[in-house]
Amino acid sequence: MLEIVAGQYLSVTPYGAHYAVSGNAPDPFRDLLFKLMAHTSSPLLTEQAACLWCSTDDPQKALDSLLRVQSMAMVQGTPTPCEAPAGPLEKVLPQLLPALSDKGQALLADAQGFYLAVAGFRHETAEELAALSADVATLHARHARLLGNNLGIGDASWGVIDSGGASQFGIWPLHVAGQRFALVIAGRPRLHQPDFARLVWALQLRYGVARPDDA
Image (cartoon, rainbow, N blue to C red):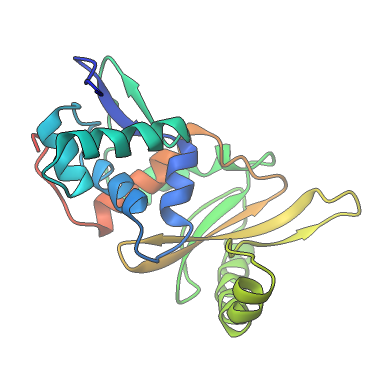
């Protein structure tokens, strides 16, 4: 029988954040991760909270689901709560983007091809890259059946690679609260950084459904 370790606060890892935004199909784990990121600080783990996050009245089923996402390194427990990025997105996002590229060059664009935040690119370049991300999204949608059904490629990321297979430039779609964003990165991506999880957290707080911090 699973039991809760007292005094643990749950936060989403960079891998968990990537899993959450990598698609928009209904998924209980994805729903759980977004519920955790709907708080302004990592919530305290209790049976009541676990049932709420996992949409069940059975505490054991809820704890089993939490154990599974923990075993996949999607969530982590800490003795003190982690705080979400504070402040307006236009100030928060530029601080988080540089860590996601080994060149310090990245931007976040919306589905219409306009950039919301940028680091390391000049304005004119950022505008063109944001427009390119929208074109790539259209291209992917046109060939989604081939990629998903015939080739079994579920991840919609696109990139330019060198002869050794290393990424020179990449575009990662981020699906948050029914909206699609594009993360554009020059050089090798560093999505394993905590700042990636914080970026997704900030987007969820801005565009997702807010939850009481004591839920």
